[in-house]
Every structure is written in structure tokens, then in C-alpha cells.
Amino acid sequence: MKNITQLFSHVYAPVKALVVYQQMADDEEFYVESFDIGDDGKPSNASPLTDADAAALSAALQVSEKQNGNWLRPERLLPANVLHISPAPRGRAIWYTPAAKATLHFTANIGLPDGQAHVPALIWEATLSELNIFALATKERPGLDTPLYHAPFFNIYRNGSVCMGNVETGKPARSLEHFISRWQQDFWNSAFSHTIDSNDPVRGDLRELWAALIGWERVFPTKKLIKCNKTIQSLL
Image (tube, rainbow, N blue to C red; front, side, top):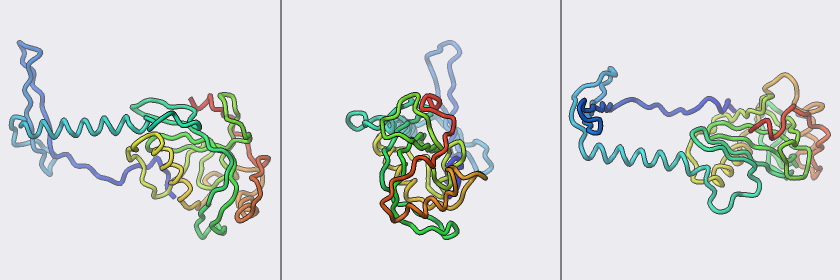
């Protein structure tokens, strides 16, 4: 796993530059020139912007605008487990999942077998490129003043930030539901590999806790959770 804040392996190189000229005597009349960008990064071959170039640019901007907005838009009614949505440009969603059984994966150095175990209720806070997770000690729907706890997993910083390894982040989602589903799948399908901070995020030993839960029907012991001095309100 790597820190999910380290984004994008894709490399983009400049190939075109546009210069917009405005007529000095008429602030509503413009002229656009297109320049090729060479390997040295310098513009050359100036020419008027063609209709084909303008159409391609318009299509690219429309796609970008559509992708930037649609991932925050629910497909139908707002999902019942969504607690908060922040609009673009740095869109963000906060949702919760109740206590349930999940399949956990581990790298060999952890010394734990992959398997199913009960996990506590969780708070998920995510943008397109970042994910934070906290635990809940209650079975009820969380409110603004509900206390948050450190998530009882490996690969999570004390501030809740998740280290997601080689999971590709930053890809636009089709809808809010798709965005939520993809983050949850990416998290549970990634292999836990290490503790990031010096202290375990639970009372006692984290590895021993999961060794006692994986493969058994034991409900997650919320008394093992440690408060992190945050509430839902502090995330807004």
C-alpha cells in the first residue's frame, strides 16, 4: 500500500497553446491563435484557431465539466447512509456503514490469514483522491456530535488518512453511488501491510485483535476502540 495522497502515474506533456487577442477598440471582439509546443517546450507555428480545433476544445471542456460534477450527483434519491456532500471544485462526501462482516486481506509480513471478520460501524470521508476512515462505537445513525474513534486497521494514519498502496485514485465517478461503492471496494480489496504510527489504533495489540476475530462469528468489541477527539461536526 502507498499513501493515497501521492496521485497519478499519468504524465501529460504540452502540445498546443492558445493565445487570445482582444481588439483594443472593441472589448467584445477576439481573435485566437494556436501554437504548436515543441520538445523544447517553446511555442511555434502560429496559426488561427481552426473550426476543428475549436470543436475539439469545446468537447473536451464539456466532458471535463460533466465528469467534475456528476460524481456528487445521486442516481435517484440521496442514499440513506450519506451524511454530507460538499460541492466542487474539491468535492467531498461523508457517509457511514453499519457494523458488518468484511473480508480482510493482509501481506505476508503481517502474519495473519486473509478471511472474514466482523468490523465496527465506520465513517468514510472522501474526495476523488483522498480517503479518511473513522470508527463508531454506536449502532445508531451518527449525528453531528457523535464521537469518532480511530479506525482499527493497519495502513491508517492517526488523523484517519488511509494509505491505499497502488490503488489508482483521482478517476471521475459516474455518480455518487458509484463513487462510494468504488472507494469501499478499493479499501476492502487492498492488502493491509503495516502500522503507520508507533501506537496501535486500539486498546491492546492490533494484530492479536484481528487474530481473534478472523474466521469467527465474534462481534467486533467496540470497547477496544480509542477516541480520536473528533466528531462529525469537526469534519465539516
